[in-house]
Image (spheres, rainbow, N blue to C red):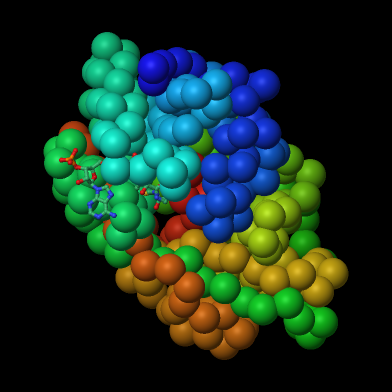
Length: 271
Ligand SMILES: CC(C)(COP(=O)(O)OP(=O)(O)OC[C@H]1O[C@@H](n2cnc3c(N)ncnc32)[C@H](O)[C@@H]1OP(=O)(O)O)[C@@H](O)C(=O)NCCC(=O)NCCS
């Protein structure tokens, strides 16, 4: 019997196995961060004594919820489990008066979301830079502090995500006063660049250079919005190549064009 229930901290090893089988970059720390951010919005299907499907729906400030980690173990696919879990999550969101849900869909996920009333807004892309010892020259920068950036970040992202930024260990970020900030974190396959918000592409370049200079040769993943002015050119100039194409989808609310100030997303599961 398949049972739908909340995802718990003790499920993290199995949830991590699901994202690993799918080839995704999330670590156990990323799963724990989702649970910390919104324990009531993380769901799973348990069948045969194991977690076989997951979905997370984390609430940012205001009325925006970000859906992610929609995964089914390969041997359980095609049985309607992801659909059942998504319907459950959406009903829960409706009971919480959430009026706007967003997500970044893979090719495999898009048909499922379309059937559930999501519409496509614009492309998002994952870019990859191979492991490299090349380190660009960086300059000194200030440390990142969430409270200095809430306004700029909220204006660019469209909702207050200060709780997420707090959970992303601000100590490892850096900032250029009034112009932009960047955070990074370890990933299963590659270091993750983002979130990064900057007032223009020159500031974005300085923040990227600083991030790359701090690596110890690791590969890098960067999720970006290709329509952002100058960002694709910047990614290519620093040795990144496109790896995966996704589409940003929305259920409820009006279409809002992407802000040119979003240089790097916080993660496909966070927005
Ligand atoms: C996408 C995924 C979660 C679907 O899980 P699932 O449990 O097999 O999905 P379901 O059986 O509930 O199918 C849901 C709907 O999507 C459709 N669907 C599922 N997989 C599909 C595929 N590969 N191609 C086309 N349609 C597909 C089905 O037709 C179904 O519609 P229906 O209910 O009208 O018949 C699963 O394939 C997976 O884990 N993929 C890898 C990770 C991934 O890409 N996740 C999506 C992130 S956005």
